[in-house]
Length: 421
Image (cartoon, rainbow, N blue to C red; front, side, top):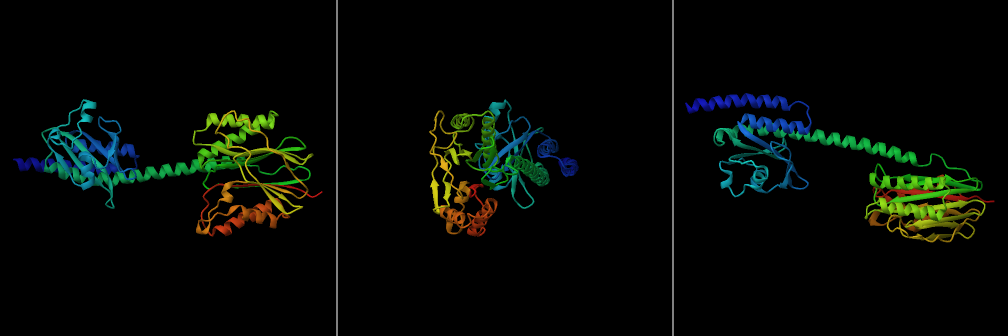
């Protein structure tokens, strides 16, 4: 009689497993897949509850996303009964949980639920990798038996493959969405860069920027103020990616708004600095050069918060002056009221260069940096070229030096030249 009962259970369970397998082959998201798995485990094994713990390989943890009667929990992948199942990849059939020292009674105490018996089965992927662990709690009629172990193992094989597929699909969808978002962010950021350079009598200017990632932490801007004056801006936020891109875009917007309101250069710089102190996290800051070129006086009044070196090529003598930052980076200290440094005087033929550290610090062979001297040599050698062409020559020099080493930081160059009288 017992033999007949066992055969009846096996047949019913087999059809249920086959039905679950068919449903798990449908394209559903991970959470829906997890819900289907635990419902199937509970129904097939005539149990009260079921839980799937997914394996987080990076953190070596097991965690729940969907479970009967549980909120999401995480624990080390070697802890408790589930951890032993994951480590040994073997079925753990516990007839009396409170008699087993590995059982964590804290969850029962928090939920008010009492776990009598427990069946834990490893979920192994198609290539032998651990996907997670499935637990089934409190069989309706007594404890879990050997037949239940076989049924649970058969179900676990199908569930593991289905869950693995669902996770891969979810990861791919997240990756695609992130790529779309980054592409949109890149388009927006590139749209903030000048599409063409303004013309000021007696001067030539060119700018260029290439982020290390899809979005970068560098930005530059050139904004005519009136017929005789032009604002120059170069900002470099710590790091690169979406966060720094937002920071430098914010800085650009604030400086542009201040210029439209005819703010004084010093007041404008100090106000933007104070606002960044309020907005940025403690470990974030922005190095920035903001200057005002006056073409009547041929002077550049400026503030350079952490941005340097500034290069000033004196064509008459051939000397290239390396000017340090005039104060600390923006966003670090409020109320600084930074004094304005001595203006830069542009003689006929002189070149003023704003260059972010991604150019100077580009790493090439033997872990050496491109460095100040190579930048200066290119500018000196080709100072008579158009400024846009000179930027291209600088970029090419860096590429030749790098010998294929990847770009690790954003690169931005703005060149200003006073034309010969």
